[in-house]
Image 1 (tube, rainbow, N blue to C red):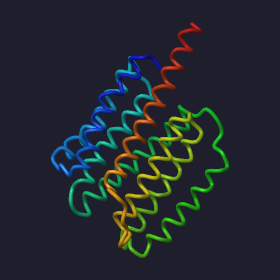
Image 2 (cartoon, one colour):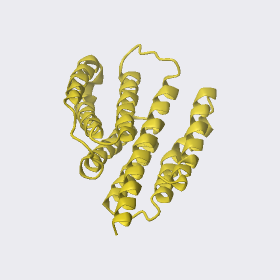
Image 3 (cartoon, rainbow, N blue to C red):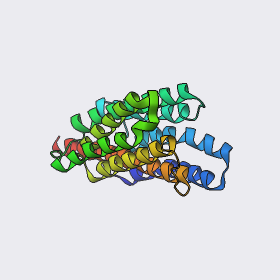
Image 4 (cartoon, one colour):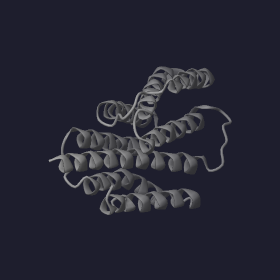
Length: 222
């Protein structure tokens, strides 16, 4: 990754810090605005880091970030409709990441260790099922896809793998915050978003780094 590629993530880092600070001080306006700027700032990083953002890998990354952007916005809309649309957006985000990880970013075999994610999925549903009601099926399907994308992330570089794990942890805490009665965690929104912005940043940094490295090897070969 060139110096320009690394510096491309500075705007995203600044917006992330502003958002996290807004959550800590309880500034709802700044929190809302900064959250809606997170994914556009990350898309900007992709454009700068990859120089010429063309081809399927960049298209998949961009689609995933646009879906995440829509999910961020819709999850902030009160009511079940906003939640379901937001959940659907992130469901499609993880489908896109799953395709990206396995088709374009894979550098090794998926380790057997990821079978533990099935245990996570079963345990999560066992604990939350009594409180989910009509949302049981959507949440179960989402959890299965999340586990699949996290598993696929382990076939990629350490940056992408770390991002996949952080995404899983963030969504797990969010699920307990939303559905488990009596769940309490210090500054839960802050912790969830800290893990989320780190997850997205690691995944995209790893993805763009892999693409730039591959492009450099092609150029040297020519």
